[in-house]
Image 1 (cartoon, rainbow, N blue to C red):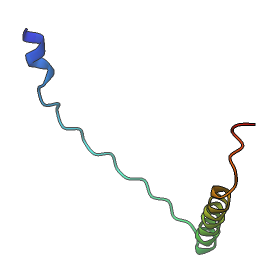
Image 2: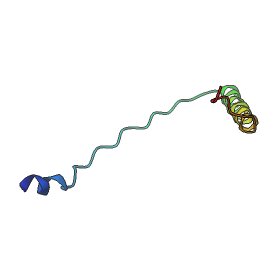
Image 3: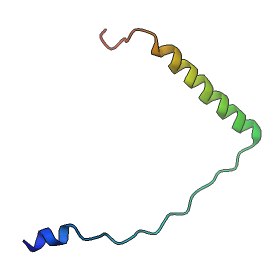
Length: 55
C-alpha cells in the first residue's frame, strides 16, 4: 500500500533547456517559405484525388 502513496508524488521540476536559434539569410528564408507553400499546394491538390491505398 505504501507504493501507491509514492506513485502520485509531484516530480521535481526540470531545468529548461536553452533554445537553439539559427540565423539564415533572407534568400534562404524565402526559399524555405516557397518550399512549404509548394508542399501545401501539393497536399491540397492530392486531397481531392482518389486514394491509392486500395491498389
